Image 1 (tube, rainbow, N blue to C red):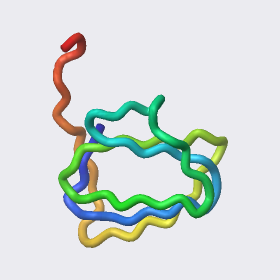
Image 2: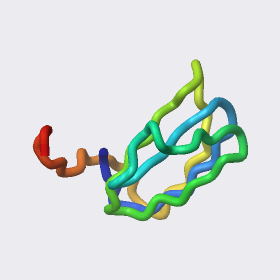
Image 3: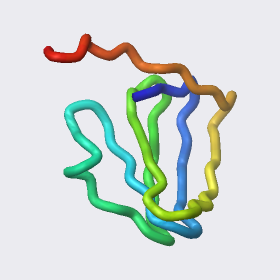
Image 4: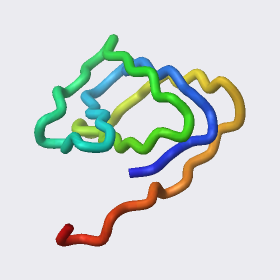
Length: 77
């Protein structure tokens, strides 16, 4: 999981992706193909993955583009 300072909107152009937040797992998240969309609020932990050989996406940021690893509880909890 990671966070960004800014909000962003993302549209999948090519490939298949997954996007999930706290309390969700990649396994239970539905894949998103071309035209798939998500809005990610700044400061909210999330993860995403490209499931195909190549993923192309359009991302529009509200401000600064950055990434920080989110605080995670220790494994086994």
